[in-house]
Length: 179
Image (tube, rainbow, N blue to C red):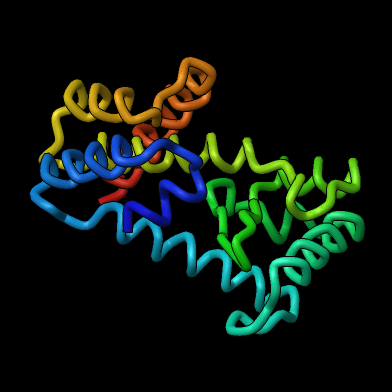
């Protein structure tokens, strides 16, 4: 499972796999990485079906072209509004379902292979770190230390990751008050 995340995030091996293993161990091996990959796959498949694509045999070029077409039609926000951390590996190419990446790719007419994925990668790093930090068994300081060591907390993400974590905490507090 670490290999998929390492591939789409472009982080160095074996440091990433070892660190992710340490994060998993800190949560009692609760499978946070596996659940995240399942969530990514589910969200990507929902979007692909909404685009009229077959999730079993769509090529990377077909998917990328369909996402660009949706952006040009003005369907981007409704289609990709909840997929900021979704990065799918298709035919050896990383395709970002992040709205900002998709808009930039369509606007600049980027070809697959030179497509922009950095906003999706930043979102995925934040999502992954957030899930480990928010886990009941995880010590936040330890999780941040491990995440920083394996490249999940680059300085360039500091503002984004902190803001997203605070937003998620506010949502969790709101959910608890409703119960």
